[in-house]
Image (cartoon, rainbow, N blue to C red):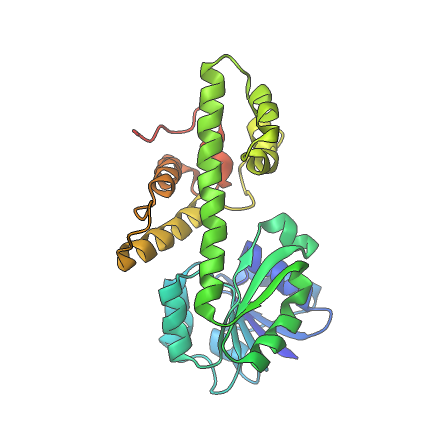
Length: 290
């Protein structure tokens, strides 16, 4: 297939690299230097997004958020009539509804995971569209990104967006739980390593294993897998979704997520927005005033 891939940041680049084996790829990014790795791997580079999508059989976008999607795709009417559009951008369910209404060939394709799983082709991937044939077509294209057991077709872009936000809510809240567990362990006289070990049989075992290397100082948060700014942006999409619904389910105000967002925002305010979100777990992390 001739695929136009728009948005070659850290995640977008890893996704696009997987497509070069089987497809003819044209890439575009607002900052042109971020296409260099893909150009070196054999992709063509377009000067504009409009140039990239000309003649494409499929357009894939990997942008920072819904506002970037509107600016890059919707406002200029970028997608040619009838051309499938697979959007990996993290958006809210309401955003997904808006985009699907504007472009009937819209398929929500959010990915779950960070750069390591992206490189390994073991991400979780939701593929959402009411058009079964289109959904199957996109599932086939993005299969190289995914752990086969975590590649899931769903009946709407809205449902795909919901699945991604649920995954990132679990990640943000778990990270806040680990932050507080480390504080409790420290207050009780346990070292960070002891606390991580004691969490091994608890519900926080996964996040402790995932982020333990950052806590131990074995990895730096600079240039991390998932930035504090990115997950904070996603947390705001979740909060906006719940606020707009005015639901009555217990926890409808998302207090745990709001605490996680306060921790993230404190680190962003301290200049660590482009660091891995593990920055909230480190000694000396900014207090949130909770």
